[in-house]
Image 1 (cartoon, one colour):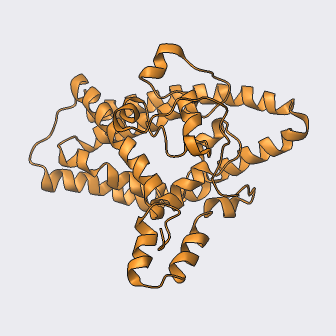
Image 2: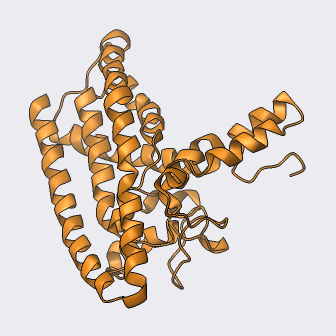
Image 3: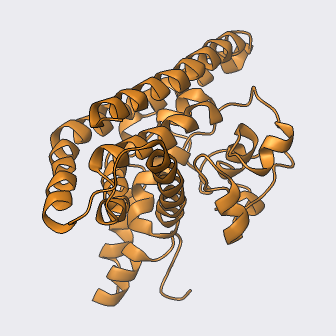
Length: 282
């Protein structure tokens, strides 16, 4: 399989999942129409979620396109071997990209600087298919850095891009309440039920179910939680803004205030790299 074909395959897989997501969106819009008083709030929440693509795509085009070139430069300059693109390497890169996504995602919850971006995805009190495209402006930068090890292992950049695209595209259909539990598939795959838990702000649901395609990593590393009662979606703190700019940068003001009030350079650094909610007396 050639480099061009692998990227075409990634595009085709992406189209399949986005088509599924589009079908779910139509059903959710029809459902929202019959919600009465809640109709306006639900549709407005969808619009705000979609608005996050404005700064996100701006960063993608202006910054990340250039950074992606680094993958090719590093691949040529630092890696003397090259894993050929075969069906075996496609399977291998999917497993590797899914594993890296688990840790990329988990670390984004555990490091406050990264959380300022990923919190945007969690800031909606609604849970619908459009939540799947609710991203922080700089979230792609962390993803780029997290997947660098795959380049150093010898995977061609096109194969790495394939893995990243498929893992993200798979998650499109997870952001819905329309689909219940899926029986035995719940043991292996990340499902809407598992991902609803991930978006819950209830204490027992916090920081659970980080998986992309597979839920196995959560089961292995102790972050799995089954869905019991319906989660309370959104951030733990009281945030329910419909202002797009406030949503895009929801966590930045708090971080700036904490760092400005820090008593030492060490505390300033810890505010950046410790878990969200860290304070010097904890």
